[in-house]
Amino acid sequence: MAFNHRELEESITHLDSVDAARVVSEGPRVTEVHVIAAPGKPAKQVVRDVQSLAMARFGASVDRRVISVVQISPTEFGGGMASRPALVGVREDPNGTRTTLKVTLRLDDEDRTGTAIGPAVASTRLRLIGEATIDAVEQTFDGVPPIALDSVAVTNVGSRRVIVAIAVSAGDGGGEHLTVGSALSTGDDGEATVRAVLDALNRRIERRIDA
Image (cartoon, rainbow, N blue to C red; front, side):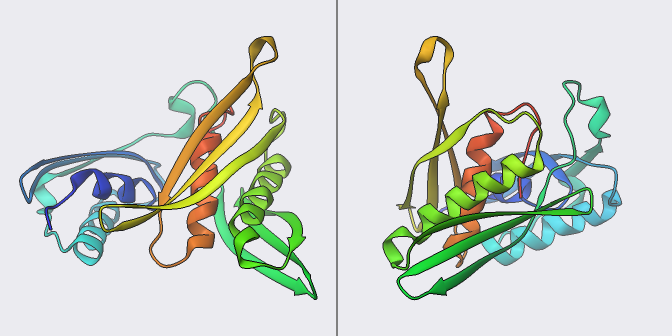
């Protein structure tokens, strides 16, 4: 299977402290990796994290000399980018024919748990997780505009399983404003759903969020 450097690029952005990444490759060989990261973790550790991720997930050996890391404080971005919330966990509490999905996000050492209640059937699980994620975001950030989950779906891109989420809010003039987010699923569709919803909300609220 041909190496897909865009998938590696997306995976790097989900590493702890990483805000953005750009991967350049020539065929199967990675020639450049550019990373923007928060200053909380040593740059050498960020480089090792990138190397470990590339090898473990994609079987790609990346020379540390081609990885460049720029560390920028959140206040240097302009526009008030804040620390990103981390995904603490997804929990399901079934009760007969009903179930409660709980998604917990952590920001600045404080946890916020969003909930959604619905029928205890497999077909509604990812939607409930998405709704609980939005509830957690609304508790975490002040001034978030009203947002609802339009849809969430599982699809395959090549050999990869991907979760796609669409969020909807009111646009200017009373119309709908739709945003789309996606995340690779590496075995846990629930956590991938949270990441997909956060990816969609990134495009809608002022303070960038991720997991």
